[in-house]
Length: 100
Image 1 (tube, rainbow, N blue to C red):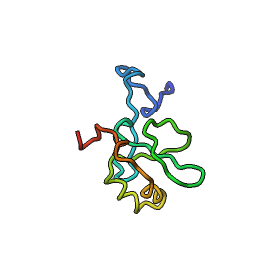
Image 2 (cartoon, helix red, strand yellow):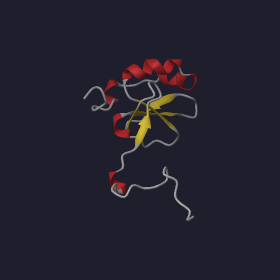
Image 3 (tube, rainbow, N blue to C red):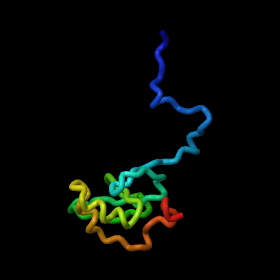
């Protein structure tokens, strides 16, 4: 029997590399959205979280889909400090799921 590639690693023939859309999960509500519909946050060396609207800063990021999820993330021990981050209202993506 010839070796086969596992389905999770197999590349669909009809989908080109340029058509793939990155998917990320909101840490507040755990729903998955396209990366462009989420706001990325990065934790600095001092432990403070800051918004990264262009998603270019170094480090591991956490994503939120809406201002309501900022309140939800307060319950999450891993991202508790994210709820206290200074988030200007103008940095939220304009085409978030549910607000379109």
